Amino acid sequence: MPLLLGTVSLSLATFMNVLDSSIANVSIPAIAGDLGVSPNQGTWVITSFGVANAISVPLTGWLTQRFGAVKLFTWSVLLFVVSSWLCGFATSLEMLVGFRVLQGLVAGPMIPLSQTLLLASYPRAKAGMALALWGMTTLVAPVVGPLLGGWITDNISWPWIFYINVPVGLLSAALTWGIYRHRESPTRKLPIDTVGLSLLVIWVGALQLMLDKGKELDWFASGTIVTLAVVAVVAFAVFVVWELTDDHPVVDLKLFGGRNFAFGTLSLSMAYGLFFGNVVLMPLWLQQWMGYTATDAGMALAPVGVLAILLTPIVGRKVSVWDPRVMATGAFIVFSIVLWMRSMFTTDTDFFHILVPTMLQGGAMAFFFIPLTTITLAGLKPERIAAAAGLSNFVRITAGAMGTSIATTVWENRATLHHAQLTESLPVGSPVLDAAAHGLTQGGLQSGQAWGVINRLIDQQAFTRAADDVFLVSSALFVVLIAAIWITRRPAPHAAGAAEAGGAH
Image (tube, rainbow, N blue to C red; front, side):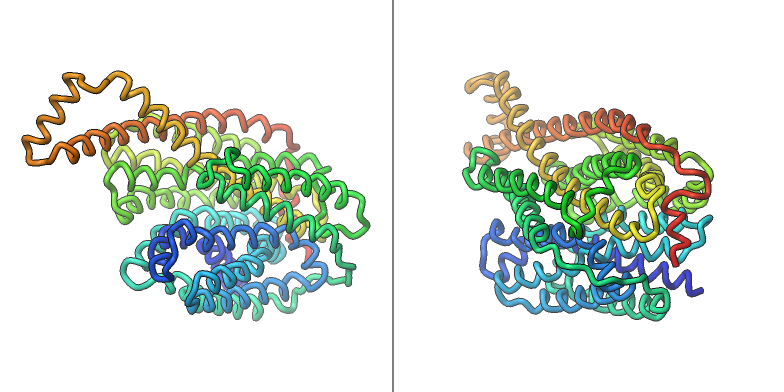
């Protein structure tokens, strides 16, 4: 029973954290209107959390050695509850952004430490099951977040997207402290790497701001984006050199010297970037161009959890027996098939044909996180697991942000191209256009309204074709990524690095 309760408490914290990174997305118009700012200014609610979170995640290893895993996790959850409560009470954008920065900073250690504590509490043979439960929350929450956020905003009010964290967080913190406080990890006082920390804040902050604001400012046509890119590249280069030569680095980059960690993190992060970019794109296309409401889009995407829930226990039991590289390869192949199926969507595609690839994607999700995390952590000493989990999660989160920016930017750029191609064959004065406009005016529309409807129909085709382009390229990239998986070594059966962590305490 303590093991089950511990798993529930850690999974709740992970779910709450991942949910909070996406739940505010659909609430921005309501938040901006309520606080008297423009929707563009309102996006700082998302940006501020993302930047702060990305900065604090890779600090997990250093903070764990300084304060202990259980104490750090419990305090992170409690401070997350407090900052969530403060976000709900914010009366201005400045207050809300400030509290979101605090929320992002304290949220950083929660995901990697939930991973670490789960692995530390399960016996070696069941470490895969621990990762399975953890992986489920990380993959399902980004899908649930926008749906829950939209429902709460429409039916209650936007502050409640933050208030719901309070009871969940308090329950998680109480259970975690009650169960794990006697299993605290060893601590040691380490000097603070102020130079490394400062460089980390600068390059991660610049990179996240560039990714979040790039599309809005037209990317490298903007001097602001160019400046942020230069700052990010220079600060990152200096950061790498400093951290590799410092005696007490704030981030242990030497972990990348291990083949499994380097290529495991690479394949996991790039695949997650592709996955997350498409997770964001699907509901945008459905709601903006297919006439779906937020609830309808949720119904089309929610079944992704069916196969994932059914298959995850099997994957958890077998990951230490089967070759995790084969399992991950299977996941990538299914992801590729799912995206290839989506690349054939048209404006006439019905709900059932949208549902089928979504169902199949759940099977890929079950075989995605657990084997790749097992490969990534294989062979590491127990005391390095927290640092490795923090660093790999940081790279994954950054890849997710990049995947979202790239997918939505490419989608809009390809839509512009398709719109131009479609209108080339329909010059002004063409009989087809004139007949369509005449039919609409006969139906009661004014001339301007009729041409607006025609333009909307062309846009619908253009954005649908653009989404198909993104899906097709993503499908091909998943196949290419399989090569990275096979550069890693197979973890020894029943002795994967993740499992070895099970004997840490």
